[in-house]
Image (cartoon, rainbow, N blue to C red; front, side, top):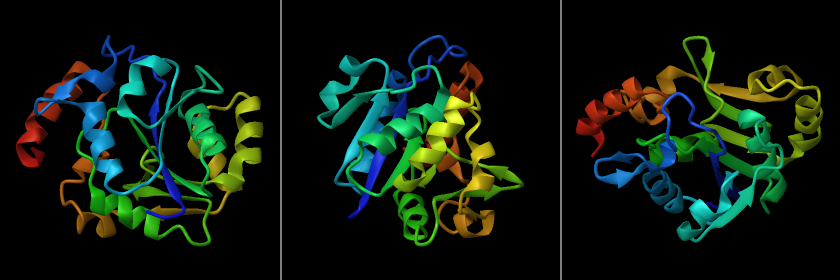
Length: 198
């Protein structure tokens, strides 16, 4: 996809699950490899943001150290936007095993006139599956510097488009592409969902 990069946020400590989620296997394949393979069919530039650069060099894409380590996804998004050569970056975490190409392309297609485009389902934002504009870097820097790490609290300062459930249902009725793994229970659930996606 022209004029848009993709970023995989891989800076978390995976404290709740006790090991790097990126390297857990679903359908016999590591999650990071599943994420990368989907993104690689859509984007010409992929950036991995991490605190452990050496772990991801084998992917063959740009791997960068998080500028704001331990500042959560806000720091990862800042780093991705900072290093990308494009004006827009699609971001997702390293623990979404069931990414959907059509959903990614749809989110990206709605970017015109907006700083951020993310799903908004049942009154809940999903900020880690969406597109961010490089022009928000100054806002994001101030936001992080103020110590606020919950990215959706920045949204009132930006032009944000929320994509509703009805639109996304047509792309994946189960919305499994938004599922991510934080706990052992989530991993068990992923193994069940794998029957639909693998």
